[in-house]
Image (cartoon, rainbow, N blue to C red; front, side, top):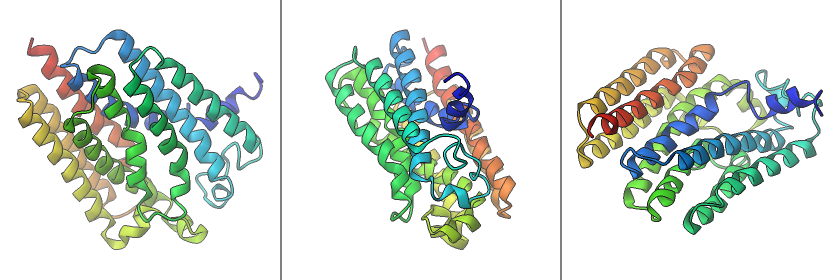
Length: 286
């Protein structure tokens, strides 16, 4: 088992933390707003660990679902399952174990949060299979990646106000933006193997679609900032997020593979500065 540990860590992408960060930022936004900037340390720990565990479980089940496709994609042909170093059943077992641990973490929380976790598990587990038939699976990914938002409100307030769903909608548009950049890297391979991605669906309008999704996401956060009467520190963070989106346009405008991948990874900064603005507002308004 110890000898195989590096393979399991690669399977759940511990060597590539960008995916975990893209889940963490919107969840932290929701946790800070739901608690008016005062989340309990225990709740923060539960949600951070739960997010990391569910992302890892999602990666394992994704590789299981895509095991016959990944061998035809340059970027994924050496993944542990595809290369035969890990059996498919091991990935399923690992995903189940990680999901169980994540569920055990939320046992101290209220009933509503536990009920939402069941739906979260279903969405995260079914996302990889939507690439067979859904024209924009990245939108489904946005729900899977963002369901920590209503869960955070449920855990803090024992309810899901309209703001929770509005923030989830913002995350869906953001996910479509950054995961379309990611899909642009594999466009040629995806055409050959016949799976569906937003990059193929948008076609020659892919760059325009990405920038529109950024605009909707950041526009929703304008509404949030105004509705909650956020101060100058929040708007500095928001402006930095806008600057990140503009920078991404300079990277993707010519559709070069590695620059599109760089834009995808840079979304960590967009999410990070947006959260920093929210956290700074609550920290200094007291």
